[in-house]
Image (tube, rainbow, N blue to C red; front, side, top):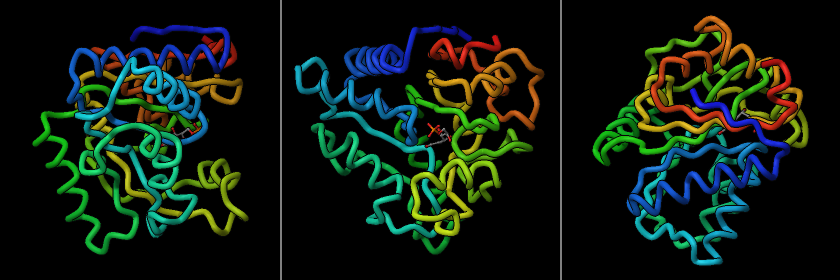
Length: 241
Ligand code: F6R
């Protein structure tokens, strides 16, 4: 694991955007794995800036998102589909046909998950996967006591995650309790991984993921076994390392 500690959120976002830009410059049809949430927002802003300065383009890029709430219509403003459109896809030249997101309204979930996995494989696998981390150590929506062998599947969100994500909804009752998420195996099959974290509320999860025992109770700890992980964190998230 390479660990890059930067001064603040802005630095973290810039570093991550530069890594993605380099990846896409070297391989214009890169397959990117993308995350939602507060952590990568600044990175998407930087990517849009770089795109506007013509330093990167997304014409041939293919993307797969990590996760989506189950039962939420893609048009719902809280869906991760809406998040991605608003913060990246609508602002760059990516082709809509090259965007892949778990479908939160799908009837046959198992079938959909298999198709998602197969599509990732058919396109040659994920070249660079961006991850955030939950305060409980989750990556994607792979909650503590995870099965390290799981691929894309339907997950139950745990209480801590529902509470953390309730900030985006009118009330906690509105937060979906299930999601479709890439599994740990899907994530571990990515060729390169960048994990971003900022703020004191991520410090414990980062310390356990980086220095703790590899353990299903801290899903991110499995990343210790991946051979190309870059962790970009601000000083606060690094404070327990
Ligand atoms: C989002 C995702 C989650 C988040 C994590 C951190 O697609 O997969 O694992 O990365 O919950 O969320 P934020 O960045 O909002 O703190």
